[in-house]
Length: 435
Image (cartoon, rainbow, N blue to C red; front, side, top):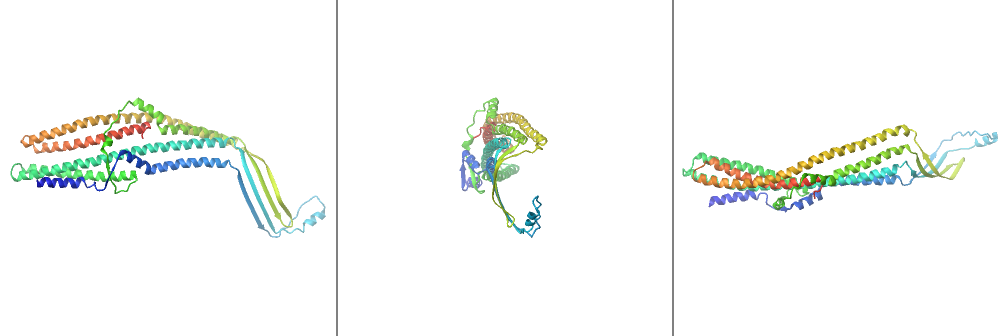
């Protein structure tokens, strides 16, 4: 009885080492927290914001521009000699002018009227790129969901391994105590006791590895969820019980073609590239603007201009654009060609990703069936082997092997159920419908 109590105490110490202040968390809660605290999504949103600011910058360029400038200058006493067709008297009269300061002020305004459709297509391209950034953010969001699910699965598997190995360690400890008493009474050979002791040591090492894996998995999960590092988490096993039908790969691929955000973003970037071609062609057109200005000038003793207003239409055209614009247009067309080629590459990748995810999920479901039978077989094998051992029909090695096989089958079965959920969610992510 004392041995059983000691074993139970050991089991309690190892199984509850992670149980203090444990927070139970469901799969849905884990996904929600990961989306709320994801640094990647915050970065993705900043890219969307930058695209919006680019639109604002383009619109600001179409607003009227207005500038003011003024200067006051002190001069030495310059020699002023004005050449004129008038009489010498007039020229002599100007020779008495003494200028030692100049003051002037200027104001100018300009309203762009036409810029070769540059504004129209630049704004159009910027809007397309903003939408593409938003779709990129949605793709990142789906990746964050999948990453949270995978981390949640790893947490569940790590904790399940700790529990099963700790339970096995209690049994190994009880066996060692039992064999110790038998060896003292001369019922079994010392070699059998040493085998049981070695088995207990191996299980202890396995438990240490499992506990270390659980610590690292918990740290990773807390980082994903934005929780304090010391938070102990417990995954809900019910999240891995319900499996959905696999359907067929063809339907999943059709779903991906209509729901994948990266494909939609690439199509929109092609529209933006088309607009960029028109932007490059805008250099071939003149720029027209409505202009106006005001000048005030004062040179004491010489001239004063208190209010000189001007207004009109200004036209500018860079003749060099006739031979420089061609390369810009070809560059924009090349970018469009690259995007179309990337679309073909992405279609091939989607086909491969869908089939890979689909058959991985099908395989995961089949593994569950196999491991479920393996657990039943391992339990029955251990029961039979234990009965034979008690009747001296099998060796200690066979009993210990049956024990290891039983524990490993339980670990494999638990991991297979968790892996199947992750595989299905991966299939949903690949099809662009994970939520």
